Length: 173
Image (cartoon, rainbow, N blue to C red; front, side):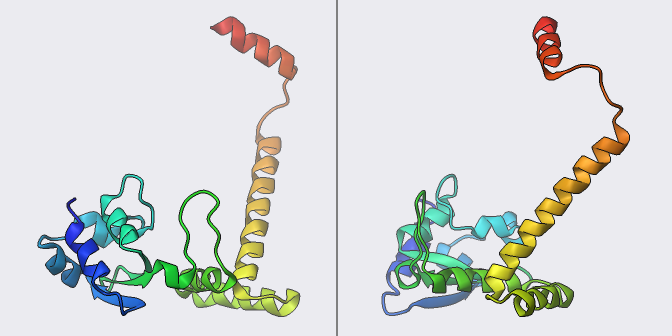
């Protein structure tokens, strides 16, 4: 496996629960440079095995990535078992882990977005993770309503009903 040196490095760190590495240090461990996509795309560092041999290396060693800093070219590896991290369908996360994951996401938000989240917490109670979820759900509902409103205003009504549309589609084949 191409990324086996990273797997072995992480396996050998049994006494640590978190390791912060620069991209240069990871390249030194691997013996080759990281691909350009690792320096540009957050998705490269996701904790998904399928189709990602690099992620399979750290996941197989019992670690996951957190606190990615693309600009600073650093990433933290955290013991998966130590955080309650679970992978795949039916995976469960304890409250502490889900909050830590949400905090990582929140860290990259603008001050205005953080104020909006904190205002929601003040008005409705709960924590930032719950406020983020509620605000995102409201945003999605607002965008959906705006889309329906736009279609209603810009698309002329049709004399066809759904049965006629299905029939038209079938006859066109």
